[in-house]
Amino acid sequence: MSFFFVVNKKVDTNNKAIEKELEVPYLTFPYYEGVNQMGLDQYWLGLYWRNNRYDLSFLKEFCGFCLDNSIGKICITPWKSFIVKGVKQKSRSELERFLGQHGINVRHSQLEMNWHVPVDDTDALELKKFLVRSFDQNDISTYGLTFGISNDVGKRSHFASVLIEKNALPAIVKEFEVRPTYNVLHFENFDPNTNNYVAYAQDVDKIELPGLLMELSKSYFEQLGTPTEIETKLKKKDIREHRIIYQCQSCMTVYDRLFGDEKAEISPGIIFKDLPESYRCSVCDAPKSNYEKVELDFNGV
Image (cartoon, rainbow, N blue to C red; front, side):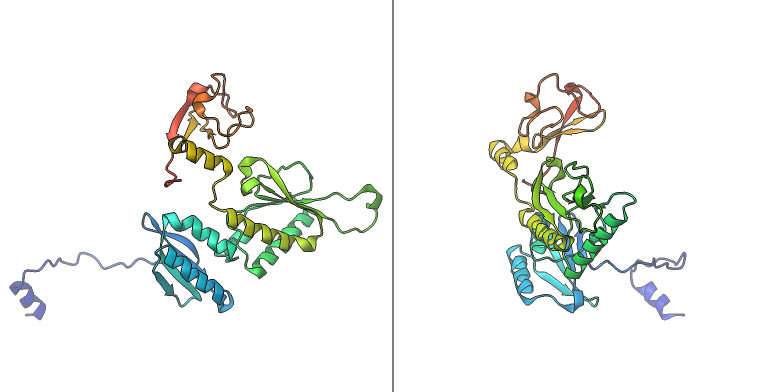
């Protein structure tokens, strides 16, 4: 008689007979880089120690950031990285801005992605590779930005946060080997929906582009999460209206008072009920009556 049988008879247990062998599923190791969700309202951040180094001034400021945002758990990992747990949803945008301002890249694959390059254009592809290589060597974060390379100056054909235009050579020097020059532009607030480009630099040499784009990336993070002038006015005027959009039920196009409707010559800031009854969807031409109100949750914004 086994010891287990004796104990099982004397003690009230909740044992069950084995019906099949235990199967332990294969789990991959977690990705120790980037911002990842944990639970409903919290995130964890993984920072990869590039060359096993982070500047001491950054580490000191980062600890200050954690204290200011009530983040109390920093874990060192064996994979040349450290993990910060318990980043609240309300601190997410401030965290992105903080990392960007310090040039900390937590998504190295993003350097290669989010580029709009002309089809079958070897020069444009080489320019992209040159810029990506410069970003990688300097460990610059470009998360949240998209870049476009264009040979059509002034056409603004790319839906990208930042545009690099290649200037055409003057006819008088076309027969000579002359280095091309470039213009650097970006959308207002780095938001392509504004449809308003801002010239950042003109007629610059290729060798100057990486530095200019790195400066722009830091400018992007400095303004990240900062409300625009229209948003500030709307928030002061009516928070509830600011959180309401209207959506066409035929094609799901959205009317948002923050942006208005440029095609219909509707300026930003005009609420839906003040639109003329003749207003129609700019995509499918459905009437105003086909729109339904949708309330969005911006977490207090």
